[in-house]
Length: 115
Length: 378
Image (cartoon, rainbow over all chains, first blue to last red; front, side):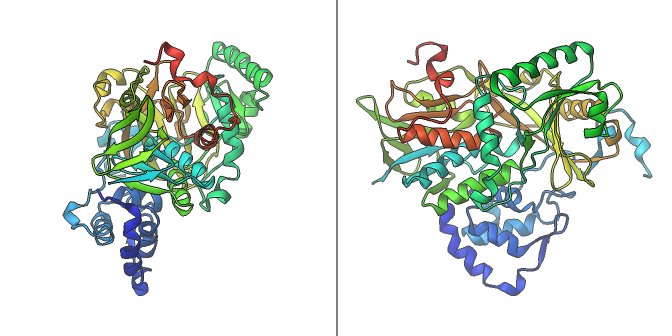
């Protein structure tokens, strides 16, 4: 967890200066670019969960299983932490998408095989 | 070394940030302190309802003020907060529920001038084509709606900071110092903040913060769960609830559905009342939410659930918040105990607490929300 959010601004700006990289898509599920994530980190966001709440990075079908590490490294660079010091996204069930009817146990999940 | 502030706000949830915005706008030098992060508890986990219908009569004036503020909030905060004002439907499935709902609706219309009415099955079908056969009608309040609580909270925080407020996360308040009974400073694990004003917007931590100045009120964390589905094309825009209060939810502007609900024995699954802030998932709850939603919206069964999460409601014994100054402790102002309704009324809370702090008459009478309504405050 970082400390003063406002202190991250200058570091975020220097990373954001690398404009050519800004259009790189970091979160494929929600199509969130590196530039959008750095913009969030410039304006009061200082955590991986914060980036998710503001930009939707990690909020899609894979729940950050693809982009989580990339977002973590951007938060680490911006806040001056090591990546392993940055609080990762909270993992929550289900591990993979499950139809409401299956979760409701209205239908046996094995019946969904092959769909 | 102490720094000096006009006001210290404890809690970077939506209400703390809305209060900070209102005070910063009026030129006060404020700092928001949070032990974890912006939106870390209920503000980040709620269902996003902006609802007036079926509110407690004490809270309804705040909810109505809030709706009037939400309409211009995006412009005011320079942020699209995904506010959709498409009405709230509270679904009835029996003639008993219909009778009670018609009476409740008439009372809200007469007592508060709220634009709410009962719609029968025929009119309901014109509003929402996806309801199960057994739904007989609903209350319909066209000015109700929903918004994105995450974007709203960050928008308040960001605007407050633009106006000069400071936001400090990862910093825990350990005590509030009084001198001759009056607030003098707030002490954290990092620093001492000299101030004559402390605002308790600490959500589920609000009772512990009140205890720091010698106050107490009956509030306990109540566990609940919410789930979100994959996105699909727009189906309906209303906020949905039921006369049985067994679930609530809506389709977001992004296309996903957010559903919250109850199995009825969450309190016994979770030991939140022992002070725990863990928010686990109990498999019973998401399953029950899906079962209930599908009884009302049978066509959604194929929709994939992509995440479920737990949240803690700061529930006060009589289910309305503790709001406003406390005469016994000059400089201490309460804005906590929102009992699960904190998001929808936050713009109004920010405004009226701001007015109370500045010694003005709040737009909404705060007397139903005093800390001593349960008995002596000390």
